Length: 532
Ligand code: NA7
Image 1 (cartoon, rainbow, N blue to C red):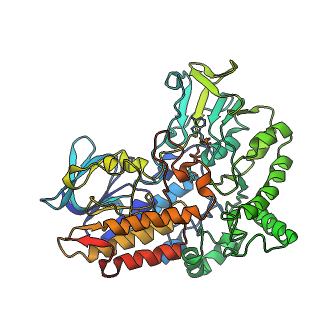
Image 2 (image 1 turned 30 degrees about the vertical axis):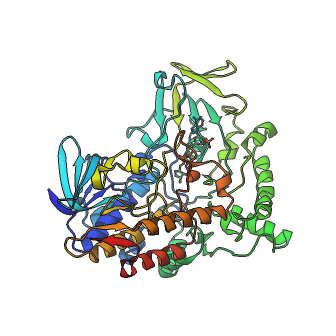
């Protein structure tokens, strides 16, 4: 089966890439391990899973028809609705016939003589294609904690990103949740009132911001639809994370220093965003993530909020993070802090009482306390950025493996291409703006960049990034992160969450406008590429 392009992954990125490349006249097929579309939104079926960028923004902007036709039922859509949306887009764009489901890609190797990728999928299928696009997701390789005895747990053991399609019985059962970041917070607040007893195992507290989700207001929907060109433009041009919708208005980032504002102005700005809802507190001022003094002001605002929401002040103290606000992905919450006011919810701080082991009937803490459990939920995150691509055996020129090539850390020019892997492209991958930006918007930009690059190669050209362009890009990422407070905190943003993984900068933290300019310059005369 010889094609122009094989795309891997039917999430936001892969669907977008398939559409763009097919529109360009390329014969492209998409391979997906699941039995339907959705990617992240297929697998993360845990109770409470929902977006925390407003759905009217966290959606495709490349077609005005699509964005006008679709109606979201809530301000922040839940996982089932996001999946329905991606199903609808797939059919609306006529893409389903070009997708092969239940087809996990296990390997791909470049043949220099054929100038083609040979892709191995499923049990014994092979696809040949000139170009390979890996849209396998930034957060799609789940990681289970390395706790002695975990596999021997006798109840239901489940990772949030591998939630069974037919659900897990929770009502009236004793449930433990390990992990208190974005996924853990969502699952904890959702199930606290359903389960008999909930034990939350927290290693690191996070600064959570109230989401204030609500049903879609028809007037608001009409306002956004009428203003989509402006909203999409601002999302691309505004420095920092692209979200611009807030409290029913279009709100660009305030670039002022938090320290220039008077104390009353500062608190009013924080308070307004806190009440408006969403995870974009960082956009209240221009320097919250670069200046320790400005960041301290935000911490001073947030601490009393947690103390006022949680009745027991010892529990509140445990829920107040040690790290600086905004230096990790802030979870959006809806009743998370209040969940700890319930009699059936207990917070176990693993820094005081580490888990010793897991046995058939529950968790044994290092101090000897036994916690009996029927269900153990691991909301323990992902091998971010590189995990999903490295789980495929990808071999480039001279048979070099991607894992070997990236042994000291990934190096990915614009987050799209890496040297020695000709005609291989990543969408929403490592070292791209995926994390600090809106993935659907980035997916479209990158898909079009890839399409433009392919279009300039002629009928048989082979392309790789120039080594110096890639080095310059990776150095630029590091320089941008070094201007922020982020590198001082451990998390998946800094690749510090998986034991043994090289700590490195996996994200582009500049503005999307600068990213787009750099990508444009790279394409200009193919300045950043070697073409043969
Ligand atoms: P994250 O953000 O990686 O969070 C994982 C959580 O699990 C976090 O609280 C971790 O604590 C905790 N964790 C991981 N391993 C362990 C062990 N061994 N013991 C105890 N606790 C552990 O993943 P999420 O799924 O919540 O969110 C990922 C992104 O998906 C999210 O930001 C959105 O963009 C969508 P730690 O902080 O490492 O101490």
